[in-house]
Length: 101
Image (cartoon, rainbow, N blue to C red; front, side, top):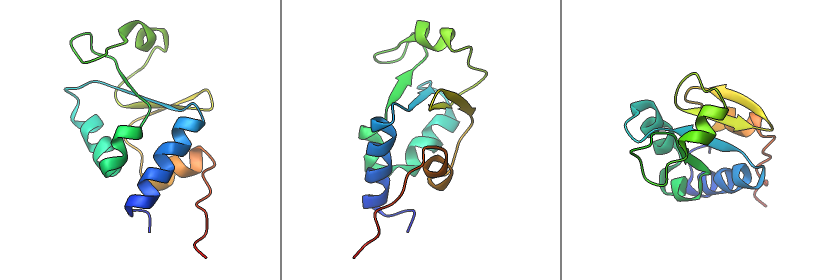
């Protein structure tokens, strides 16, 4: 199922391996919603904090990307603004879940 912990973790690792990035801000409710979809695997997510007040912030990087809102995903060099389901992120990043034996 798309909500299992194993699936969340595998997708988060896949996104990291692909060089994908989630840009967001600590105060952004949509970013919090996006992170919640990953459950505990959120620790693995490639996340960039855009607000200078946030932890480990990289506002210059975010400005260079000309982001229109948060969160915005960068996958394979393309920007995808907004919250995306795990299934959408899997499709955008060509994630193939290893079939269970």
